[in-house]
Length: 367
Image 1 (cartoon, rainbow, N blue to C red):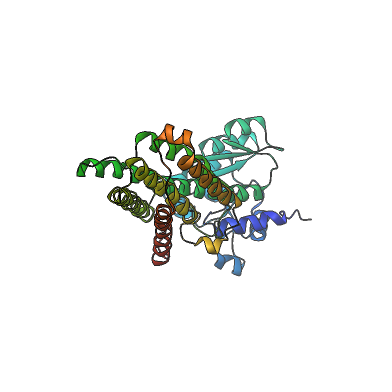
Image 2: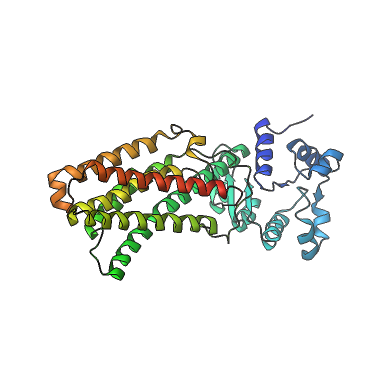
């Protein structure tokens, strides 16, 4: 007689192992049964799976271990059999004491203490008791381990898109602040007015930044190890990119503003050029920000059509901002000519190419 694990559970365990997630089975079954099921699931090190020697650690053996001995052995064992509720709780605490983030699944009343102690307690929705569901942080409605692996993959995609939005939006705020500061330092007119900053931030966040939330998960999301909890969201690699793009925005907007004034343009027209620099550079940088390491050409410009729609909407809004009389009155903007547009587009293209070059030069750096 045999009750084998689901096929999708086997593939989900393999996906978790590739993602750097240790999967351990804690059961009340006989050690022989637990070892056989663990082998089917691929639990244990590659060496012991090849040799067929991935033996389970029983509750009796666990009881004989001191806390120090358990800390040394808990990482090397993937299957625990004939385990009592108190020992489940002890295993969770041992893993946490060694610095691990522990997710625990369970369905019975006796699982409640371990579910409560775990960093992420997951109760079964169909077979789980009310006590287990109340003690858990989340409920798995289909009782399928593969759903946990899929949730991890989805979570990594959501986290990546959140970081992409942060890395995309911070250079704008940095550039705006530095442009204002540079004007004060050099004692010249402001290249952009406060109401124009408000226009930039409101429109680009909605039309451009929001589109990054629809970015598909990148290849290899489940091929990299988990992030350490103490690791900052923005590492040195991303911080340096924020500073780079912020500096380029400062140079482009402030430089073109002074250039237009020197060419005899009115302050309103020069500021309109500066505002368009910010918006078009942000639009170009949006395509850079779709991936930290890969080019948009490699991703495919139509793999996220929302980004294209957002860029088109933003360009339309900028044309209204620049040429509509009521917008000229509201935001102190003014129509500009083709020569000015050419300078703005050249600035956006330059920033796009610089960021892509930086990706290639630092493609082996960990994000």
